[in-house]
Image (cartoon, rainbow, N blue to C red; front, side, top):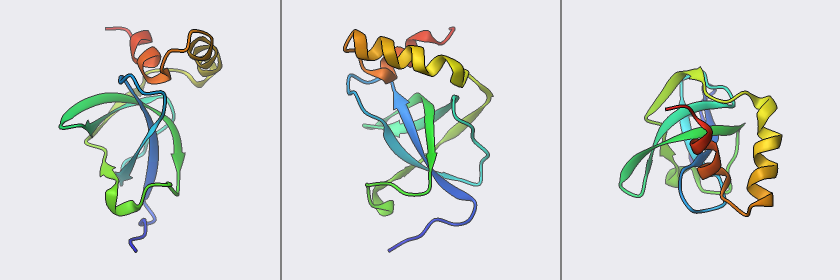
Length: 106
């Protein structure tokens, strides 16, 4: 079984897909904060997502996790707005990832 290096972690990322869940990705040697945008591989393409959590473990085996391709420098969404956006997603039964991406400025 593989283990994470001391500079690696697992990011839970919200993506603009019609699925109401987060997706885990391995992040190597890059400093990341919650709310930052990342580019990740998803279903044969590259998508921009929002980092929702930084973990040390995942329910998915480490060998099956894909790696973050790029981390943007700026924080796209402030953590203070997350509870409001989560309420909106729950109230309107809309996937959080799609809601988060639609709130970003072009």
